[in-house]
Length: 326
Image 1 (cartoon, rainbow, N blue to C red):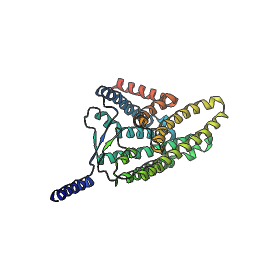
Image 2 (cartoon, rainbow, N blue to C red; image 1 turned 90 degrees about the vertical axis):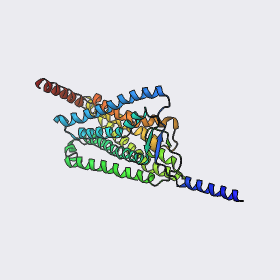
Image 3 (cartoon, one colour; image 1 turned 45 degrees about the horizontal axis):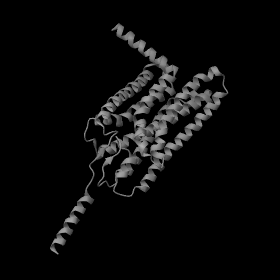
Image 4 (cartoon, rainbow, N blue to C red; image 1 turned 180 degrees about the horizontal axis):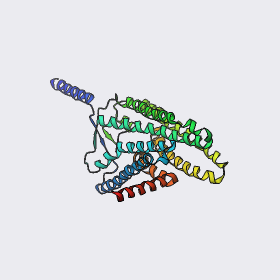
C-alpha cells in the first residue's frame, strides 16, 4: 500500500511539472539536414540577401537623388523597396547564420518579435501595392485629375494608412499567439516563426485559432488581391482603346506592377488563406515570400521601367564624374 501511495505521489509530481512547464525557446528544423547542402544553401542565400540589400537600396537612392523621379509612383516604389528590404531582414540573416548552427534555436520572445515584424511589414506592403495600383488607375483612367488626387497630402495619408494597417494587423496576429499555452513540442518545421506554424505547437485545440487566422490574414489577402486584379483589368481595358505609341510605356509599367502583385500575393494566399496546407510546398513558399520576392522586385522594376534605367545611368555617370573630380 505504501509503495502504491509513493508511486501515485511521484506520478502526480511529474504530471504537475509537465503541466506547469513553459517553452522558453523554439527550434527551427531548417531547410535541410545535409551538411553539404547546407553549405551550398549558405552561399546561395548569402548572395541572394546581398542582392536584396543592393537592389532595394539602389532603387531608394536613385529615387531620392534623381529629381526626374520625384513623382507619386516612384515615391511608392521607394517605400516598397524599404519594406521589401525590412521584410527580408526579419528572416534571412537568421536563416543564413543557422546553416552553421547545430542547434537552430530562437527564444520565445524572439519568435513573437519575428511574427510581429513579419505581419507589420507584410501588412504595410499590402497597402503600398494597393496604393500603387490606385496610382496607375488614376494616371491612366483619370489623367486630368491625377495631380489633384495624388498630391502631397495623399502621400502622407497613404503612408499613415500603410504603417497603421501593418501595426494593427501585426498586433491582432500577436494577440492570437501571446497567451497560448506551450508546454511540450517546440520544433518549428521552417527557418522562421510564423503564426500558422507556431500555433500548431500549442497544448490546446487550435482549430478555432486556425479559422481566425484564415479570417484575419486570409480574407485580408484575398480581398486585396481581388481588388487589385479588378483595378488592373479596368486599366488594361482602358489602354486597349489608346494609340499604340501612348499605350506602350503604360503597358510596360503596368506589366511590372502586375508581376510584383502576383509574386507577393501568390505565396500569401497559400500560406494564410488556403485551408488545406500542402506540407511539401510550405518551405518553398516561405523562401519565395521572404527571399525570392524581395530579390525579384527591384530587378523587375529596373528592367521593365525605362525611367528607372535612365536614372540609374545618370546616377552612375554622376558617381564617375565625382570620383574623377576627387
